[in-house]
Length: 386
Image (cartoon, rainbow, N blue to C red; front, side, top):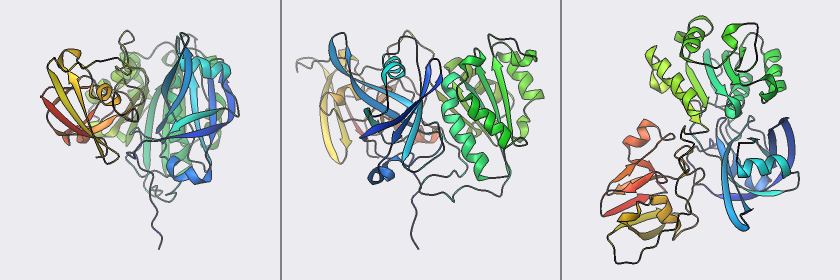
């Protein structure tokens, strides 16, 4: 009997050049981009609904060519031969603005193998393991999303609703106005297809709706009311939260107050809530002249050992230091959100400033985000292959 391999959520990252098959306008400032995946790369791009890919290209910035990387969630259930992501234009966003204005079918971009832990802990189907989902147990899922936070959520909702007639999915989706709602038609289609099992609650902050509960921003009082009168909180098997830091944290705190176990809550951010803080230290020039006190950073990547010296006064992240000697060290957001730069501390100690990506069990087993970690011992060794 052939052994089927489920898609890995912690596979070794690698970029592959893919061709844009289609660019579809979702809203005035958001597009859906479909990449064609050739048959020989199918195994590299299998994924579980809720995961993301990093995109890489070189852009002219201030008259100089610079590498730009951005992470975007996959917005469709697994389909052979393609990967779809949604890109919403951010205020001042170099890559997202370029993509919305100029990206077209036929263009080529470097796309990283899918990664991410914003996935159901219940069995989910992938391209290589379509029968893995549990279709007999009744499951109840609830998602709270805002803006482009719908991207991974719609992939999860489509997959679980199609795979099991015993699944119920409630979605609270916050936007400024109806014209800002991404995947509006697709969500309506889901509601028509599963009227008894999919409940959709549009909350618009700048438009008046019939129900006051669905008008205005989601604050603590409104969320408590929803969890009392709209959602059967005690029956929910798993929660998915995706949006800006403030909303996700409000939901996490409120659910904790209501006694929801942390292991039932999955969350992903598309901002860290600190817009004035630089995202990581990628590309920050650090010169080691050999005369000052320094940390010795050792790392294992693709079975090869690397060593780099980092001056103590520079307060350099492990990722930034490693990139100075190995440009292929994996990273995407460099802001502690995506988890691409994850590595295990083998020896020595580090201080990790932010973490919005690693699970408690990963932390307990010694994993860190190297974009956010700085040495606190004279010598540190991390393993990217672990």
